Image 1 (spheres, rainbow, N blue to C red):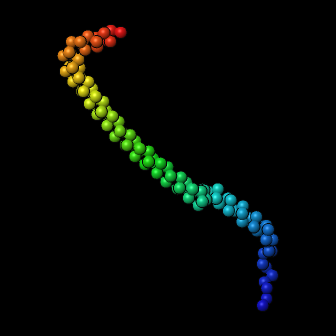
Image 2: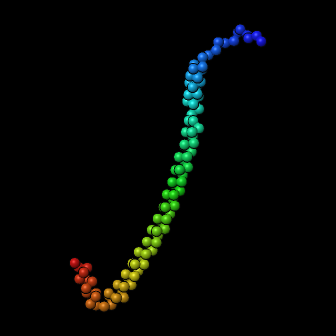
Image 3: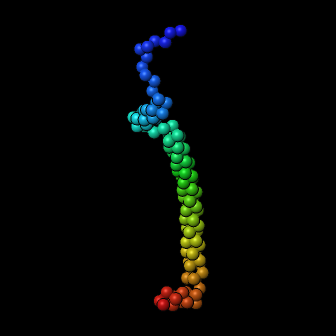
Length: 104
């Protein structure tokens, strides 16, 4: 076996490793974030989506609670008007008491 004499000189291993690392850094700068960074971004996006869905569900629950409270207030107003018309205005003594309270 004859070894050709026109082979390029061997690059020392430490220099080759340094060159490869610098090439990887250069390529990463050209391509963009690494796969790990992409996975982290994907995970963050999914977490944000889940948080938004949870917030929307909570908003819906609170809107339903507001509607229930508005209905309850309307009932109280209706009952107050009924009580005022039937009881306070019909009984003169109570009417005078409430009239005095209003003036104060």
